[in-house]
Amino acid sequence: MRALILGVVLTLLIPPALAEKPTAPEEIDGIKRLDAEGTVQLILNEPELVIIDARKREEYAKGHIEGAISLLNTTMDREKLAAHVATLQTPVLFYCNGARCLRSSNAAKKALSWGYNNLYWFRGGWVEWQEKGLPVAHY
Image 1 (cartoon, helix red, strand yellow):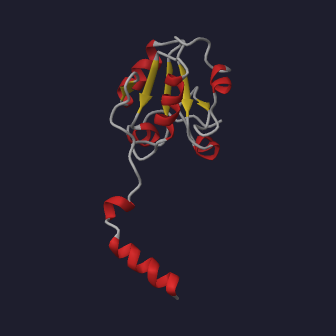
Image 2 (tube, helix red, strand yellow):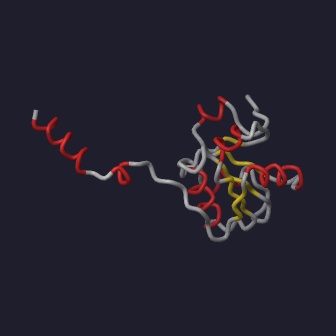
């Protein structure tokens, strides 16, 4: 009973802003932020582009950007990324579920810390991709 009362009291005292899920940063130093249109242009103009979907495998299976590699941010390490990216200069695009998801920003920051220097980040991610009605791959 005490736990229930404490839970109710804390819920009432915690401001809604603190209870909300955090949002991804607006920008990441050293990484180029793109919107859906910029992402499409990058895909069309960069034949060496590697696209990393930093979401959970189940989310990837429900739909993803064609050609994207499923590489969960929390299990991505230097070796796993290097297995898909030829050089530190190879263009790499990271995305996840959107502005309320921190997976792609975390993955992109890791890649930057490992010396990758041609990095792109699609902050709007899967939410924006679907809102724009862009093609969805399932495989």
